[in-house]
Length: 184
Length: 328
Image (cartoon, rainbow over all chains, first blue to last red; front, side, top):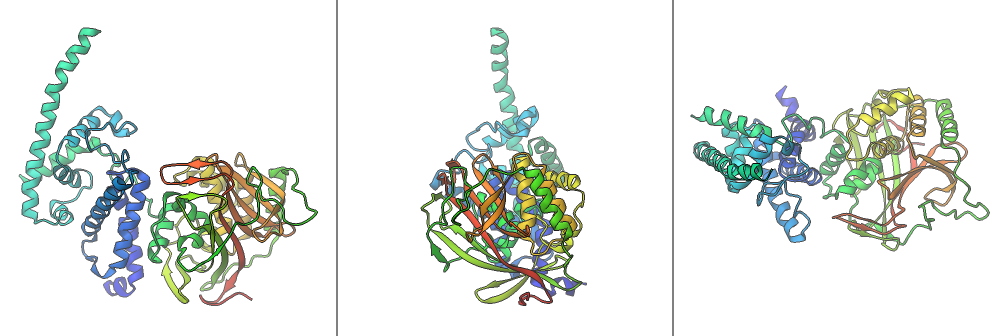
């Protein structure tokens, strides 16, 4: 059966598309607006199509995400040059409020999101690959191009820093809550 | 320690995830996803948001607009509402007819047609001449247009597709029979024959468009993207179109070649009139046209009122035994 699967490169690509397009789109949509995410997903698969021979057959998804990550970075750079991606990046930078987000309506979601926004880009990506993309650490390591061991160390530290930021936000919130109560 | 970290991070981040796992299931097969698939597997180019949506209707045509095409100027005038001005002398533009009545007649004609669907192993063939402005970012009635002819073969079961690329016949998979919009005889046969059910199905399909805009685009794309339709589903499609608010028919329109035609149209997103053109006597599909009826801006493009944004003319269609063959 394996022979059948690889006999036709196009059929293999169709299977790759069916199995992973939605998740690649999800990866992008969690980081930029939905329409740009569509572009990023298409761009990612265009790279995969051109490099069909390079896509690892056993675990293609981390490979696809590593491509998507580069496409996203290019898109962001290009967007900045053109000024059109400004304001479209999903509320992770400069602690901007993701006003229209469903998650923001959720108090806890909004709180975690705000905490993520205060972390470095690297910490954020490490946490999101595990927490949002549901990748195993060894697969997340492939996406970031580091060893599994290095990744596990980085994950541990990123998690600690996230916890620290959340704690810091709790103490910041307190005086504000007091002030509100006084004025009321 | 590792597992603990992983579980902990998943628990902490879950409420902040804007797209929880599985929430985009099926996006690879919807209208935009399928269009992207075709673009990618044909070595296509990056498409802007609007073209990505549009490809659903234009189908194979806009997907691979490439260099080396003929550049022409304009395409005949349109009135304030984007309705093409007749270029046939002595045929003034008439008042819009009652859409339900006219579309009912169109449906009756479709239902009465002999079924000419592909037999197992056969392919359907469609040849379209498409014309689009050369620029995507800024467009006006004066923007030069480019024209190209697309030839597409789709196997009856919907699993394979063939096109000419640089003079070479290239065959590729289609992404399966569930792609949107339905683009094969097998996929069409599976659609509801009941107009109300077909319309309900159209409303259910996910498209990045307002509900009625999406349903009109999807149903007209069924007509425009398929060389051969099963009579029952073709009839149901026209009857379903008649139920969408804002659908208009114009018996005195002209097709992209300037011949008298019946236009079925609707203004989408408040600024673009999308229409399909039918033969006035047989009600066979002839082509489509999208015209900006209002100036439109967004962060990616600026389009002047009166811009003809896309035109397609069906040149030939039918059933053949294998890709590369033309119908008699």
